[in-house]
Image (spheres, rainbow, N blue to C red):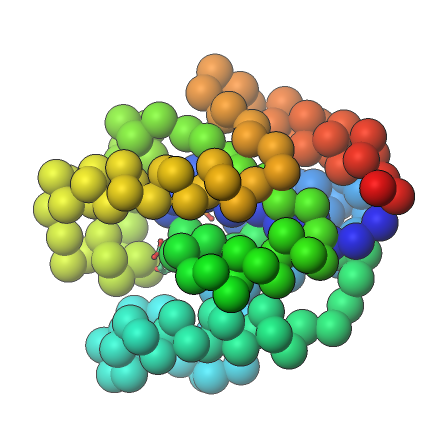
Length: 170
Ligand SMILES: Nc1ncnc2c1ncn2[C@@H]1O[C@H](COP(=O)(O)OP(=O)(O)O)[C@@H](O)[C@H]1O
Ligand SMILES: O=C(O)C1=C[C@@H](OP(=O)(O)O)[C@@H](O)[C@H](O)C1
Ligand SMILES: [Mg+2]
């Protein structure tokens, strides 16, 4: 089996599901945001404030280009599927799962969070517009879309594991 990538908007559950999926499938887990924080020694808000969003986007692409491990779970950041090169790398090196959560729920989860610089600097209307504008790219990038509404983290994780096992070796 190759890699399993989790994609989707901020707050859809990529990090939470990724961690659980890694326990369930007994595969190593990489959260791209955490890896970038570790590699740079800066927090995500610090990178945005000091180096700019463009630089952060380049770090995301560099991570994907340089990453060498297979048989692992990778939770991406919500903006990763917006670049063509990132989409290409993910589709070619693994199974891409889109966690599809309704905006209302996303907003409830993220609006108070201080670690997401885009949320800090935007209104609810702006974030909703971003959600809508990104939706098509998530859908087109993913091999499988998982609707998370009315599902617990455990149910989502088990469904993701089922899909991964079903497509093993393809
Ligand atoms: N299906 C779900 N049910 C309940 N809480 C969830 C669900 N998915 C995510 N959460 C919670 O929402 C918050 C944001 O999730 P997170 O995994 O950080 O999202 P992402 O990495 O996609 O931005 C976390 O507190 C997480 O535990
Ligand atoms: O959607 C985005 O542009 C971002 C999502 C964040 O990750 P999560 O999706 O895990 O919140 C993080 O990479 C950064 O704040 C930018
Ligand atoms: Mg995350």
